[in-house]
Length: 387
Image: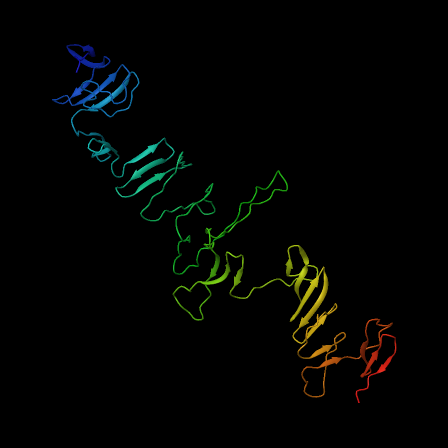
């Protein structure tokens, strides 16, 4: 080490003199210990990264570059540590900062917090757990991937009513995403999945975001994954075990949908049927009354049927097909009523009136006052005699 240059101030009071050290020259260090192992020095020149300074940065340094007039504290003993300590309120020494040469590590001892400013921002560990506290915003900014690697759970617990904002595509490397189970005497956590809404105010007529649920993609002849909806139906008796999940709906890769239970639809109407077609929304099926179903086309009722009747409101074209079983032709609310047991494979014609005009390409049969009659194409006709 260079010969020391020490600047002192001598103050005399009567017969006594006091000596005060007021400074050192540049590049002259205070060395402590018999072997001058600990050095404090102000280096006047810039020092390159990993460059030695005699008796200060020794051996083959692994050090950053330093600007001119940098202050250096150095322990030159192999594996020699540096400890910053204070006495606490009880007069006991407490280590605050441990520079561990064997690591090398910078260690903050157990239960010593690293506080930033005076607003409560703090990092503290107890030897097992690490706590990061902030009275305001805590930002973690990364130009690359940010990895949270835990041997146990990773908990994100915002205040009640607050949200967790995950901006971008969220990739989950797990087979199941499920809330934590509640206590044994509390109902399970309700979960909502929603697409984004626009912000109210200022600009009108802005659409909300779409919500897409998709099964996994296959390739080649490999089928895509199904979308499966499951529920756990209540058990038939009191129990403390969890009820089993059962599939209610499966949407398959061939675009088919399989419902296991009943499918409930609204009542609908002739102009707004409950089941309709995307390109013809006023054509479909609806509930026309208790136990009654109707078919509508372009808002007009085409057919209506119930437990004991079929009411056709338009022409019936059989296209040369056979009719097996009884056919009852009725007008209004009339139904066939026989004195005794009904037969099979019969046709009943209710009383009516003769149609006006001629049927040019056939004949007309009708029933008038309980008598079968016919009108031929030329307008002639009369009673049909089956005797």
